[in-house]
Length: 395
Image 1: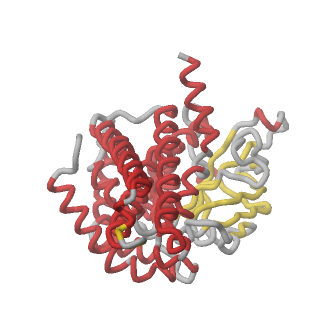
Image 2: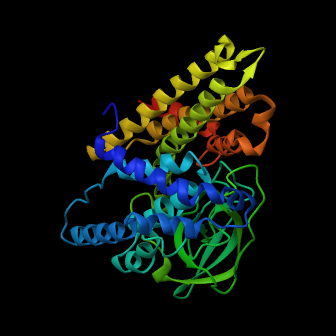
């Protein structure tokens, strides 16, 4: 795949038109936190029939699994194009959507029973409910598993869960929370089994904080979770499967990291578009700034980054069509490069705009703040390097 098909471009233009009409006019409200993103995302789903498509795909997948058939992938381009287009305007919308669909619902679909999938995954996949994926803790950070302090103790037929999570996307508003905790069995903390539970808003002992203030991604509410003797029955425990909860989380890291390339492409495309237009019209010393070689160098480097990240996205689409998922090292490499590229392009766009670039009305300021998050969440740049290198050295 070297370019979008005519059908892909039709979808892109339709999504772009919807974003221009529904998202751009609400950017200030999204950035201030006055407007949570969820009604907009539901509007996107209903406008393009994505809710019904998700429902149909869910039925086909669950019926196929019951018959022993291998699940088939959907239209990979249709998945990527809305991500790219939304990230040109408000990357936080994709973060909010992706966590609910890809991580929360994805975990339940991979590890849940048919009853759990019907009860919790389907409403998340159709955007009827909002999902959160809770693994990060105040004292763990990149040491997500070893440093995890949340515990689940078996008491009779239930588990009693205690602990806290932070930096949880959708945390303040989530209806359904996929929560990771260590089994409290008296063994050494770092060696304990990781369990995965599905929790609901309003459960006794579960507190969801107000949105945290942060540097960027303001259109994606982030919060904390506090659990004090939350009781969860066995029906809320997702099957351990091979590798347990730890392997379940690693599978999600692959999904999340590969998806960052599409998010980065949206930011790069928009920054390049804004920069080219500005270079064509902004005049200094009696000529367009696009005539200066230093400005041309910035634009050239942005185009190189756009091509490289677009090729990563195209490769990922082809892998999905072929039924092959990227390895953890491949997904980490995709994320490392594309996150750095998006952040560098956005910073250069701010520099190209000069003083105007530092003003929020010119938009590159927001995109630069949002792009920086790509180098932190789903594993920092440093963690990506570690995963890539370990894979190379183990061969």
